[in-house]
Figure 1 (cartoon, rainbow, N blue to C red):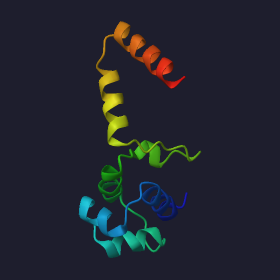
Figure 2: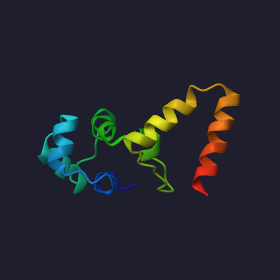
Figure 3: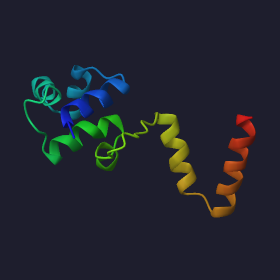
Length: 102
């Protein structure tokens, strides 16, 4: 896996500049650039710092098939609400979502 290339693709998909990611993660712009250009390999700690502001987990980052869902804040709220619902309400929530989507 080309970690820098993957990091760059995810950052661009999230429409974040290197500057903004640097501000949000505490990792310098130069280091982010070096990582994306393949000059260095990120440590797990640095990777966590960079992925967290993008809403991406390490598991998603290392997912070889490339399927990464970058959730918006609204989508994160829907998921968080769903996870705390009792089973019967969760089923109704899904049915309502399907009905509204048609």
